[in-house]
Length: 457
Image 1 (tube, helix red, strand yellow):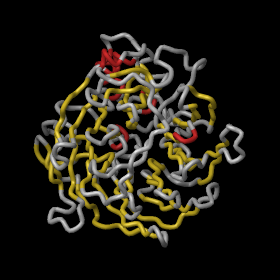
Image 2 (tube, rainbow, N blue to C red):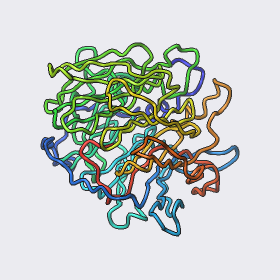
Image 3 (cartoon, rainbow, N blue to C red):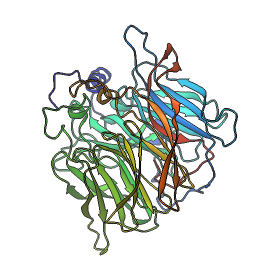
Image 4 (cartoon, one colour):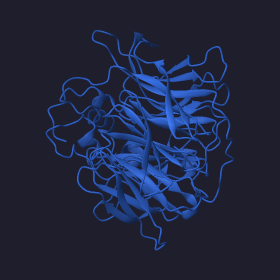
């Protein structure tokens, strides 16, 4: 988007990439310490189905006027039933640098490490959660992903069976944080680039898709992936541009052949849709999934019911404000929608896949990312989208001053929700490295004993 505001994410990219040229050719396992063999997408993980005891919550610094900036941090929260410290922060792990914009993160294949992206800084933080899950520590920090891969702005992290992590990259170095977006494999032990997952950054995206990249949903048993759009960093990272009818959002969604790592179908959802999350149903072999489009306040479903290999996309719900996240129950009965713009969480029955029905609504200020317990009964919700969007003054001043981690009890049998604690953890007045104040919680993961299926993110 073209705006008078400073585009902080583009500034960060330019600062960290000015000295490097695009080098998107594959690196070998010997050079990176990563595994350059193909991941076996038929592998499964032994899902544990146990209650979570800990939450890992990444939070972005909010520096008050006149205060010394603190680094972003990973907070550990005790959520073990009956614990004397239930709902309390029991550890804070500060990042080594200021200004990362920690955002999405994820486990490696054996859940011994977390890979935490710096969305603005491009840094990869490799965090050990195996030795002492209550007090994780940073093992490695890598700062070369942009120069090594040719891509910028790391987002979604998914563990691969070959021991690497798959990371989506929203933009490219050569275009100044524009197209193309893509995916890479990263060594989960070092945070280093191993090779592109699919086409490299040195390409014409009008000839070799995808043009956009944001999230990726994997359906391994069908050998299919779906990747989404949001928008290019140069267009969306500075904030909400009310002078733009589409907010600079993208319009395309892509269906991939996972084994060959190539796009086999490009779908145009319409201008300004900006599809975010990609969630397949958890029903084995079912060719159905969903994505949320914040630009048009809608939920879309994709399906291949006729089995012809071509996915049809349907707008199945509208009027959702600004849907920022969606998450699926383990049995694919309910889809939860976080409406950041409307300040609410929706419980939606999707048993009729193309005709979803809202069954319950709970108010959570600026509801953002969600994490659902494996028994489908506890839903954890954060409420920071992106610092530049949280603070955007073009729409009448900062909207979000009530940062927190919220807990919702979900009645999976009857289809109701109840807010527990308001919030469970208050991030408006939290201890950080330099003083006490606000921090912006974004994504949540459970302790490493809780193992989810391949593709979970």
